[in-house]
Length: 165
Image 1 (tube, one colour):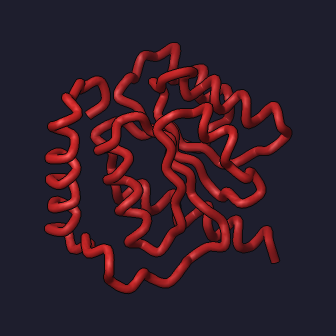
Image 2 (cartoon, rainbow, N blue to C red):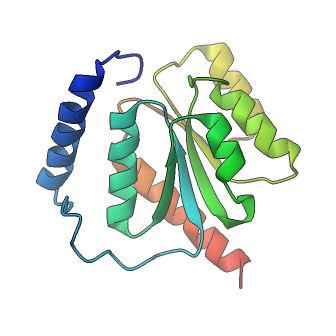
């Protein structure tokens, strides 16, 4: 979905369609339903400028029982994320203000090594090579494989739980 330009009036319809798709896959879209059991004391951060793509990953992880924080602008994320409360980050490469690799560099400059997964529609070899040199945990291509998202969330939430005890 990245790179797809949508008019603001169409974004709401796209979001509704995405939520309906999640509902068809067995995930509740009711805001008043009971939240699932929290699986980790840390949050999973999603940084994705495409509202629909972000909502799909966010809703999927929320329904699995994870706390998520979603940002559409990396500068806002840098200002609001409490690094010691994050167990995993999913980040798009192409973002406004700075790209995903620049964002990761800023986080790493703090001395924090938050496990990071890049989600991208851009698979140019030089970009993938640079991301791997930064020791990210995985690269997922769009459209995003939600089963893989769930597996990665489980792996790093368990690791954070182990490390905090």
